[in-house]
Length: 226
Image 1: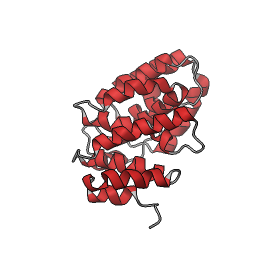
Image 2: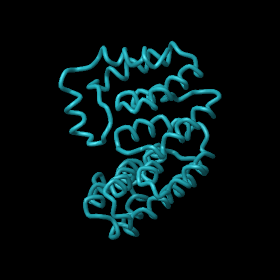
Image 3: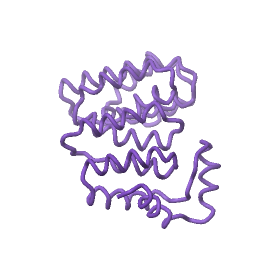
Image 4: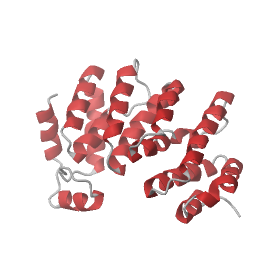
């Protein structure tokens, strides 16, 4: 499938007036077509089934390079799959997009694809840890968003316990960062963790909560019983 064919398929789902609404909502300067996520999901599902992995990778790269909002989301969705073998090239493509993040929506879709690759090979956490010291705020944020599965795990194996503790140490290093999106990411990770490991969440907040912004501290403890 060519980029032109993919964009034509996207154009078939455009809703009049929605592009302007999306541009005003996301505030990131790029082209918006006005296509809703359910349509993107349907296209991605059909193309994942119809295209070979090399063809999907090529199309995903072309969609990403178009710099159209829905095309970049669709690029991420094309690579969002639990089982991909081999997946080295998929991971390389996903990580190559991270330095280009400039807003939460596209970043979160890419992180959703990336977290499957981290679960498949947790050794990739070594690469993600390097993101935590990046000068690029969205890269630092991505280190927590892409590792959210570790906040949601139950009955962890010893290796997973160590991995969770490692990621929590990254979050601890973020609490002094005053950026709203970084604080939100820490709160999001802890809020999800609190549903599976409330005592661990309480311990983090007891140690680091005072350094967090009040809104982040409240959100992190949202599901903790008093």
